[in-house]
Amino acid sequence: MATDKQLAALARGRETLAKRAAERKATTEAPEQTFDSDTPGERQEAPGATQASPKASNPGGIDLGLVGRSLEQGLRGRKMVAPSCQVPVVVHGKTEWTTGPCQQQVKESPTLRYSWFKTCPHGPEFDEHGQAIPEERRPYYETDIYEKRTPVLGPRGEIKEWKQTEHYSARLRVVDVALAETIMSGRAVNYRLARGALPVSDFGLAPFCEAYGCMRQKTQQFKNGRFCSALHAKFVKARETGTMVPVGGFDTSWPMATSTQKRNEVLAAVEV
Image (cartoon, rainbow, N blue to C red; front, side):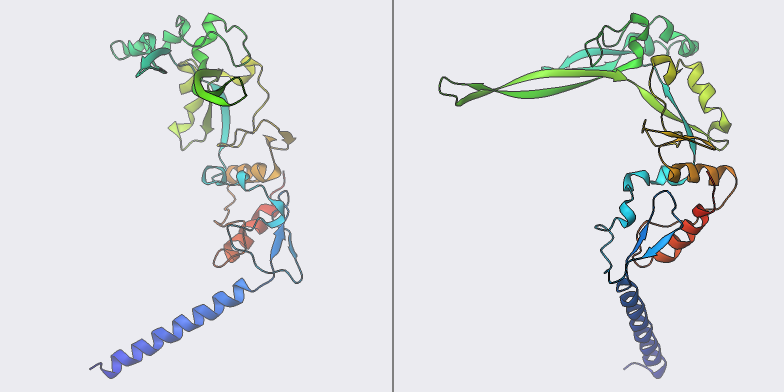
């Protein structure tokens, strides 16, 4: 039989569980709050609204694609185009691209890692628009090969069989390089440059968002750089100015509501 001390502990446990359940119910029944993506600190009550589930909610029409673990770190990134020696090989009747001889010889002669790309002729000969790629620029393009099925029609318009053909698209190999003292002691860009990477401007590409992890090219100028949104500009400035941003989510569900509110208040005070 249970002792009096055990029974008392069980009663306290039940009381604690009931209290937490009541708090959770009160939170989920609270009116939904909406947010403005450009001013995360502003919260507006929605009278009569019911709390949606975290998966279905998208307060204030925020693009949830703007939020991610790497983006919330607030790192600034620089987009570059990196070279890679790629040659086509046929594996089980399908064309694949693998590391070519120019880059493989780096294993035997490590010093070649700083020069192999200057003479490498390998890579796609045409870009995705069908334009010829200069030989010295081919290592900077990567190829995506995929199969496309097209129907073969009979005399009455019926499908007799499906024909599979290989298609490929060649595009620039854009990489994102983090600008932070905590990553490679702040020498990540120099590391890439020494190994042949070039600025995206050398290839006529539009500027990318300067937030590390964001590859959007529809940007605008802020006080601290070019970003796709004020939200990304705020994350970056908060990190660079030493402003602590609480961890949170962009929904008001329990138990994220408190940390989300604090984070939005902090970001609202960051001017960009």
